[in-house]
Image (cartoon, rainbow, N blue to C red; front, top):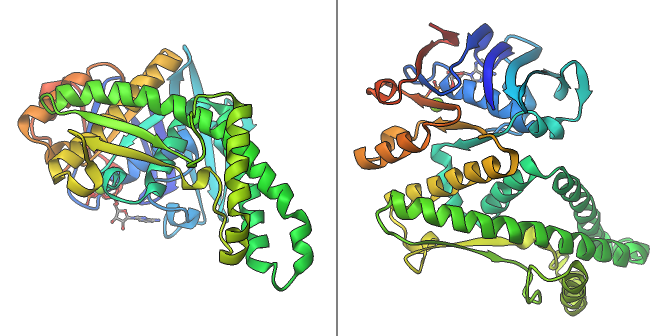
Length: 364
Ligand code: ATP
Ligand code: MG
């Protein structure tokens, strides 16, 4: 799939701009603070409905405007499709081929994989970052998983509220078990999705990483609720194992006011050459591992959908040594890619792609 054309009106520092892109590599260059990342953010937003930089929709609208319109003509699923998003008064509305859609369903039309400097946090920061990565990746190809996540969030918020307020309003405890049971039931389903995704991710990322980092071994392992003996077991077995955990932690939940059982605490352990990457990986190893995971995500989208997602590389190529740059450029010879950088550095010549300069929110 690829983005053929984009129109941005009042989005970030783009007042009224249109651009057409190559279906292969697009090198977007320009000085700092001109709009390069803003363009990638627009494409990302049209693929999954949220920004990778902010959850505040007002920030996405140009300072001097009260609404933003984003339009993209994409080639996806063997046909040309049109996506339109309007951001107004803190709300997004979306149309695909002139039909109103839920923001979360945009991924059915356009899928992206983004890699930006902040993605080093995938290796170095807490589990929340890795859960978000997993959830975004699985949701792109599995609409049922999006619904599961939505229900899970609702149950989790309600249960947290009960655990917080039950001392003041004891009658709240009447419904606590309903929410705990719901969380166990949904967790059992989520675990099976995450386990099978991580298995594929580990295989693909391991292969890519070995080539990328000359034989270095990257291992990814799913970590979930301690009583779950096999995350690939039947939903029923997993459910009962989670219920055991819930039962054992019921008192502690009431005392601490925290929700202690559920997939909201899952993690993805990352090891390089048998050692915990969070603790021991160097800057370069961290970058390579994170990029291997993103390139693996891209391969999985291809396997699932028969077409590559659009790859967005923000400011990352210049951080790699020549050999690793070459590896990435070779890998992206198929599929559409957007690469931002401050100077072209011969990237366009090496990829044969299209070069565009961005200056003060305008394409030159
Ligand atoms: P760098 O090379 O430093 O990463 P960049 O070209 O990627 O730069 P962007 O992050 O795209 O830069 O931002 C470009 C400019 O957009 C910044 O100067 C920023 O102030 C401006 N900007 C951000 N949000 C808005 C907005 N809502 N309205 C107008 N301008 C904005
Ligand atoms: Mg930038």
